[in-house]
Length: 335
Image: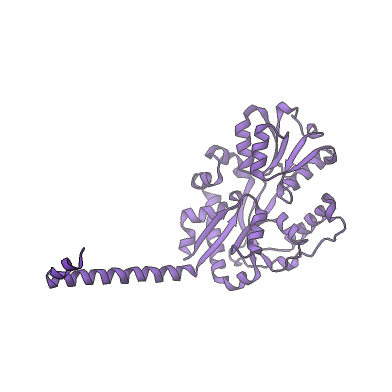
C-alpha cells in the first residue's frame, strides 16, 4: 500500500488499521516473552534411540508437557557420544550405559554425575553369516568379528566367548561403528558382528536365511543411566526432577501398554512393529536410584576392562562413588 493511498482513507478506517497493527505487534511480543519464559524449562537430552524409549514415549504422550517441561532429544549412534556431549556441556542430560561410566572412571573426569537408572536392556547379540561357515559360536574362531570398542556389545562378545570356550585371540577383531558394522556384515566384508538394536535387526532383515544370531541369554543386562554435569545437576534441579516424574509416567505406560508403546516409537527406533515386538522383552522399564549394587557392578566392569584391554593393565580400578548421586525422587524409585 502506498503512503498516499493510506492518507486518502477515511480517518476511522485508518485508526482501525493502526489499532490492528498495534495489537498484532503486542501479541507477537507476548509470544516472544512466553517463549523466553519457556526456555527456562527446556532440557536438552541425547542418547541412542534403543535406550531413549521412555523419553520418546514421554514426548509422544505429552508427559513432559504435563510437567511444564520441554525436552529436546537428539538421537546418537552410540552412548559414548552422549557422555562426550555431557562432559563438553553441549547437552544437559545424557542417556548412558554402565559400561560408559566404567570407562569414565579411567578418564580422569570429575564433574559428571550419574543421577539415576531409568531402564535395563539386553538387546545386544552376535549376528553372523551362515554362508561364511558359521552356525555355532565355536565357528567364530578364525573369523572376522566386528565390535564397537568400550560399548555393551564388546562386553557381551567377551562374555559369550568365555561361556563357549572361545579364545578371542584366535579371532580377527575389527573395531567399527554400529552403522558400519551393519553395512559390512550385509556386504560380506566381515563374518560376524556384535551389535545392539536396531542395527542387528536391520542386518538380519537384509541377510534373511543367510544369518545366524547368538542371543544375549542373560549374559549381560546393561543399566541405562542419566548423566549430567555437576553444575547442571544443581542449576537445573527442578527441571530434572520433573524430567524424572515424566519418565516414571512413561515407564508405567510402557509396562502396561506394550502394543501402544511399540506403535508410538517404532519409527524412531528404525525398525518395523513386528521386529520391535520380538525384541521388546529385552527392555525392562523402571526408575531406580543409584546404589551400592550399581557401584559393585561398575567395579566389576572396571576389573573386566583391566583384563580385556592391554592398555589398561597397568592401571587400578577407580572408585566410582564420586560419580553417583541419588537424584530420582524417592516416591518414584523402585528401591
